[in-house]
Image 1 (tube, rainbow, N blue to C red):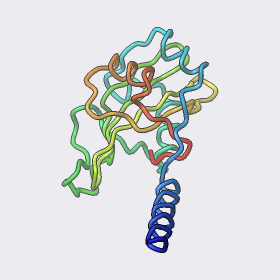
Image 2 (cartoon, helix red, strand yellow):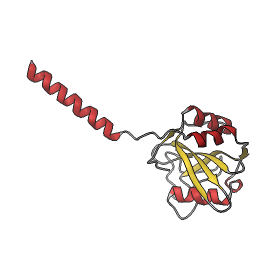
Image 3 (cartoon, helix red, strand yellow):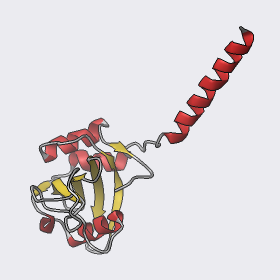
Image 4 (spheres, one colour):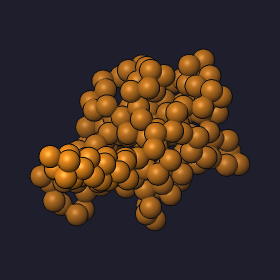
Length: 162
């Protein structure tokens, strides 16, 4: 009985260690970014062309490509089950900008559909990603995205696949 119990403890411990190794660390929304998300006056942006050029360039960089691999809301993209390599792999769902911040929410296709949100600080001189991560799916409005960020439903991650 002692040998069986010892073996069970070892196996459970190994499983717990393996599970810890596969978890992604969650990065909480920094207070200074929270203040902007909560208090800035955002104007809804309905197309990619409505985003400042610096924001589009930064998104292209985050996506790891030489061009902006994202479709406008409602446009065709590589949703799960769609294998057309000519279509973008992402689609804008909601976005809004204030005087110096933009929030972008989009869906990413492929074998599994995922949703992402990013908070970017932008000026004419430079644009930087301030925070972002995995988001709940199919949020219908910018206000729903903003609320998801503020309530922690968007899970910020230090290492994220945009």
